[in-house]
Amino acid sequence: MRTIVKGKNIDVPEQVRQYAERKMRRLERLLDDETDAVIELSSEQHRSISDSQMADVTVTAGGQILRSHAAGPTFQASLDTVIDRVERQAVDAREKPRGKVRTEEARVRALAAEEPESVDESERPATRIVKTKRFAIEPMFEEDALARMEELGHHFFIFVNAENEKICVLYRRSTGDFGLIEPVIGSEYTLHQKGGRTN
Image (tube, rainbow, N blue to C red; front, side, top):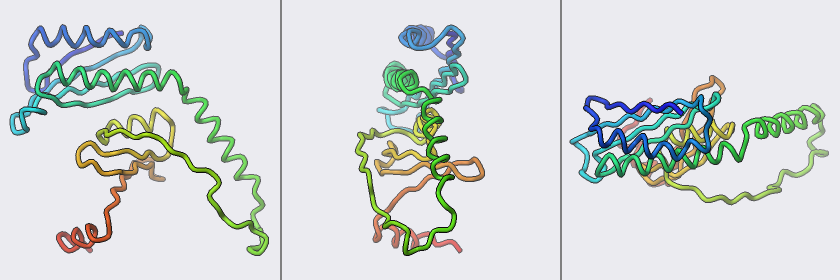
């Protein structure tokens, strides 16, 4: 795996560079020799001390992109967090091949195509919920949610936004771009509309 460590408007200290490269070696067992990894470190003084040192990691492996972001009081702390996240993504990518997901989607589309186009409303069975799915969700940033959705090959992804701790839905639009739904309680929505109504 080829690893590049660079700074965004900063000079990366040599000990931090070595630390990052050493931590990234953990991923070598999951990724092949043709993998490229870029670690970008930045510092924002206007943020609180607890999250002023940031690390962004982008890993390109076999056509897949794994990406994550973390902030902490030191670069080492940020690197610990962000590399753990990328490692989880790499494990998931190995355990859930994209081809399997795409095959399942193709099967669903084929079944839908077999439905008769003209069915009398009286003959149509009552719509009902036939399956309930429960899963644990962890806070993540929007870019991490987008990378995870792409990795899974899904058209939507539910996550807890790490910035505001709200449940959000990321979805793929027909144009190929992405949209984000941020649900708000009725009273919250009314206040938001009054504060910044646009027509």
